[in-house]
Image (cartoon, rainbow, N blue to C red; front, side):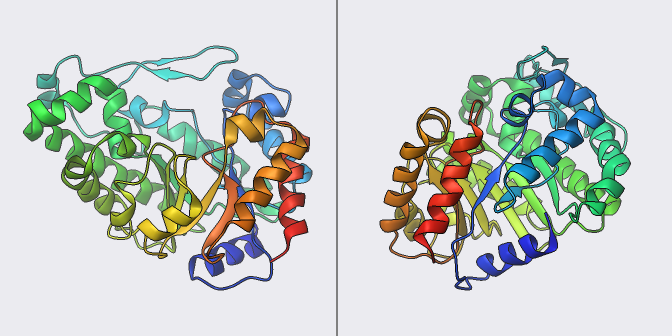
Length: 344
């Protein structure tokens, strides 16, 4: 992100009224490589292709923010790989991390990874270190430490069904598992900040938070989110495009001040449930409108969203989640143009 973009984001988070509603999008491997004309595997394995794809997006859409900006990632495999998960790669499909914990009892043998050495983590850091001078020459800074969240990582290590069942059948071991993961995440985020002092934000992604009820969220979700978001940074960004109603009233307690949510709930409802204290990033339908609709469909959806707002503060207009596969250039331009046309 550029300094003006970062300052705009901070102003929105503080609740300041801007002259014009800002726009921003999460971009990563589901959309960026193919949009830029590359396979997903080439995007992951070639630093020049990775850098060029980001530069192409910045040149095509100069009037919006991309979050977190120059995201060094390996799909869902980054953090699970540090725990020993085998990563399965295809030429043009998303990589997948295979289970590490075959039984609940395997949690007893799980060790916290070394964030400086294990799995794909050194590759994440090295890519950014190699390209940091070029990123900065383009007027951008590395602003965010990024990680998958505790429940998300747990489901990759165990399997989603197995983890959710074990919350009920073996809560003691699940707390041990989540404690190991949260401690690992604190160290992983701290190491990213050590490597790149320009970082003053955290982006954590955890859709599994939307899969549990209130009691389970308060027991197995909130304490571990609080642990990870305890870092002293200005932007505490959370992505959960699964249902958010259960967790929303408690996210401020976790320290979160920026939320990317899905299409299950309206902006007005999310503002009510978060007490208007969290900046929202959302939320026209990413697949059905932004990817599969026409530019006219996108303009219509943006207009309905903006005209229906009860409160325009603490809002960055986007889609309900990250940009999905197949979103065409003209639809993103239609989104940005519609916001500019509607004004402040």
